[in-house]
Length: 83
Image (tube, rainbow, N blue to C red):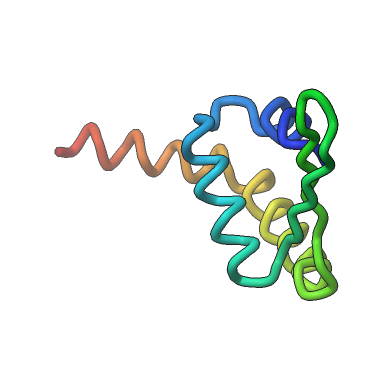
């Protein structure tokens, strides 16, 4: 996926944070970064086999978060009100 595609999909993430995160994931061997010498330069990122091995677990976490988000937000509100 190109950097700009990732940026659009992850609405709200700053350019600095996305770049830092991608560098960290590359360092950890979870993504590969490919630079194609075009004008302008094209940079793409792809999950490695190691990165793909996390997909199932991450989908489970995403599903859990979507299922329980209202409950989490209610607890936050209750906590903040008490403080």
